[in-house]
Image (tube, rainbow, N blue to C red; front, top):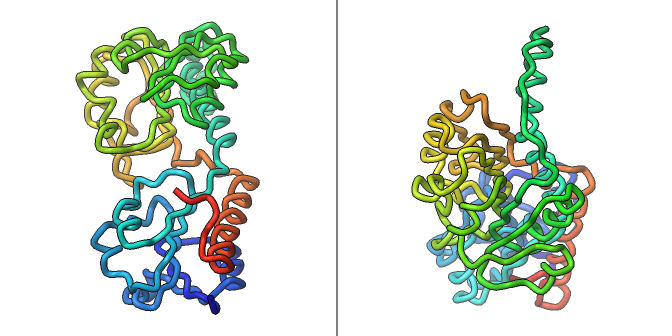
Length: 306
């Protein structure tokens, strides 16, 4: 393939764009809405949705959608495959996302941000009691690479770990993580619930009003997966009414919008989708997606295909 035309569906840092220009001609959909007509390769992130309709309108020469990140719920992968378009991702975010999950879990349970605000207001004596993490029961919904990496970290805190998903995982034994058959059972037993399942029609709003009611009043919900796994309005009500104790969120149902009612709560820790936001991880992601693209240009088949 001669130098390909790379269509950017999302904003990217200047240094990443400069690196892409070493591979091919770069155009942005934001600056050139009709640029898809010239594209050979589409480059996107979870913020750049790629629908079946968009895919159907791409020229036949488009052979790769290269996504930066590991999740693919922003791409109609089935439609891409129907049109003989490969889809690749960058599965290098596991460890950083697991680190962030544990940080969010600790911050939420120990109320770090609440107590920091009290200190900044010179209200030292008003500091609030929180809840311990060591020895608690952690329920992990979705036991893929990130879920397993979280379990490994949680084991260091002496947590009692169990998980649920479509099937048992052989890796769980080494992590002392026990399988439970249903989400219901997990929600009823867990002190802390952490979401790591892929977003699909089956898992959208897996945390809803009905399931929140099954959790302990002292339970904490952590979500570093996908925002749409949680019915946000149901969660707000549960936090306001004491159905559960607290939540730590890095992702939201309608990003980048975060409901004012959620931001007004004192029993939440809220972060702006920074699971992979370390210098090292972002460099690895950039290297990975460029490597995927280069391999496709050279051989006709990208690496890290989904």
